[in-house]
Length: 129
Image (tube, rainbow, N blue to C red; front, side, top):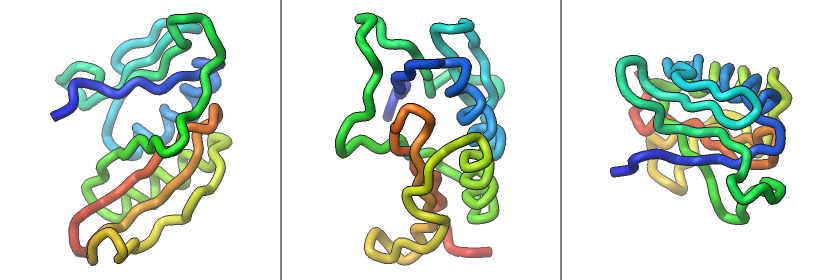
């Protein structure tokens, strides 16, 4: 349904440390790197669909209120690994991995903020194996 998601950053090089760890745990790779300006992540063999960029209008990047970037994980173990990688890269906790039954019985997610304050959710919608 989506072509891509773009997340603004005031320091793309620093943001890459966060997104490199989170996306690696999810099996994604950095497929495009424009030092200081942008980095694009995606599934190997496909085009980048998650972009970390400096704002084109040259204004300061800021996190949007109510906006969450949701990244799909194949299983709960991967949610845990991506959350841990993001936290180790300087992310801020917004909700440790766990069941969020108020969404649905199998919603296993973790929430954190990237280095620019953008809210990121890593989620698995499958029942535990």
